[in-house]
Length: 118
Image 1 (tube, one colour):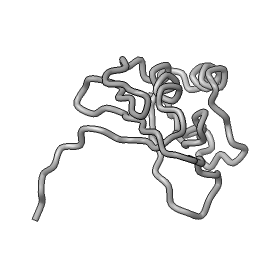
Image 2 (tube, rainbow, N blue to C red; image 1 turned 90 degrees about the vertical axis):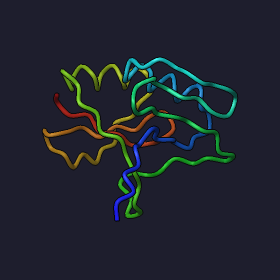
Image 3 (tube, one colour; image 1 turned 45 degrees about the horizontal axis):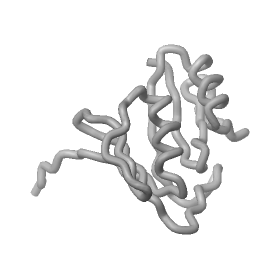
């Protein structure tokens, strides 16, 4: 049996929802919507990113044998995007399993995401 639910948001736990939403606003170009001290929603499309404060949050490590979710993005020019995101606070881990197919980055709180060519 399929429920046929529609995905509306991906919510990311973090220490500072406003700062992390601002980082992803720079990445996606999406506008910040609903926001308070503990929750910020980004985007008005069919799927939004949301960020919620978690006390004593610690980001994942990489590489890590534990299973974690990550976001994948496509960009017109991955090399330029990586440079801009590093300047905005992202980090580029040494371990890069994608070769020239994608680049793994970590946002300012350690959440992993990948950039690939559109």
